[in-house]
Image (cartoon, rainbow, N blue to C red; front, side, top):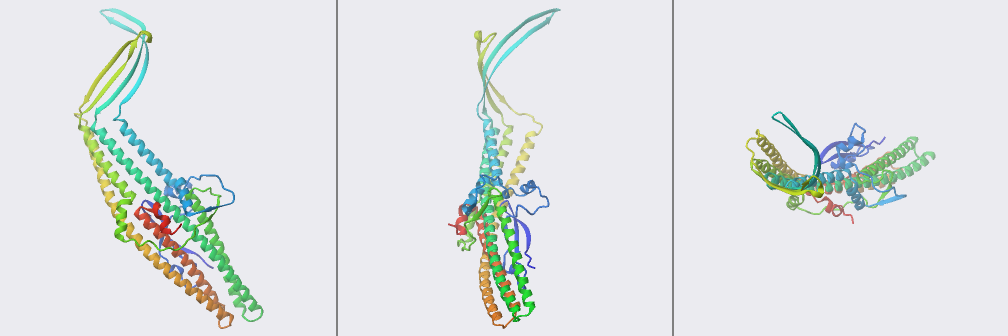
Length: 489
């Protein structure tokens, strides 16, 4: 029986969680197809990696694997290119929607901080009905009841509030950080959608290969059964050929199920209706990666990596927050004015106005300001450490991505050579079997070697494509360069 084995481990890059799958090819013979395959990260399947079947549990782990399905169900089969898949993901992916709403909240916080520095204008009208009771020297006097009306417009303006100015600046820096984080989320969506698209393309090639292997196994089975029927080969030869054919049928069934599950995972990422039938128009192909040096890539990282820019903006916001809390010790100056009319009836009211200036000087606040400063400084130290870590991690990501890319290139080269050798071995084994030089054992083993070599080639090409994606993700240019790096026109 052919069993597909894989090992799993979780890795992270740029805030996104990945499941690292190492495919150890179908163990039909003594040769393991996984021996030439490098570990490659891929977004983990939305339908697995949890003991809780709740959809909310999956979204809590990684919202970039979910989406809000948009658009009606299109009759027939929808042709889906890589560019179209990414475009749909950038419109419907749940992680990007969450990021967009977080960015909206940051913009709202900035507007709120600015509002304290702008004039506050309000108007009111009052209808008052009362009486006045005056008790003095044993006499009780009641005045009224009577009524009067007032209508005023009030203006309040903070003329001097350094703390509010600093808080507004901090909110502006936080908004800049939120914008960079939103752009970074777009790159994560591109990576998730593209890697899932390539996974479907790889599964499609595996299914086609499995069907071709089944056709070969069926032809071999017919040939061997004919030789057994004519007493040219023993019965054991026919049993072996039938086992190989049934094993090939099993591989087709497994490959088809994997293909359909990968398609469902892609629909969840890009926002297609779950029942939508589609067909990929871009295939999994090998194209050499651009020859960029480490120094050039590191230079790109410093200018293009969005999480570094976001961390810098958050650091500036933390610095402004410390200044804002320190400025709470300074006096504030506020001007208030009102103008309106007051009278027993509006038709016979008397105009009135008021202008006042208020200066407030904090003298003793129970160490509240000191505690606010200490809290702001603690956040500042955290932001400094985070920026240093992100800068170092960005270089680490580039270096590891380059190593993975070189290993994947070597794996593709070896897998192509192994596939050529396996096909030549199968040709010779078939000739030897037809000429009666050997039995079906060598032929069966040669067929299995071709199947394993082909599976390893597919895994190596996918690993190479994903390594290129991880490289441009590490440089922060996934959205701009994914088509170029994958050789898609």
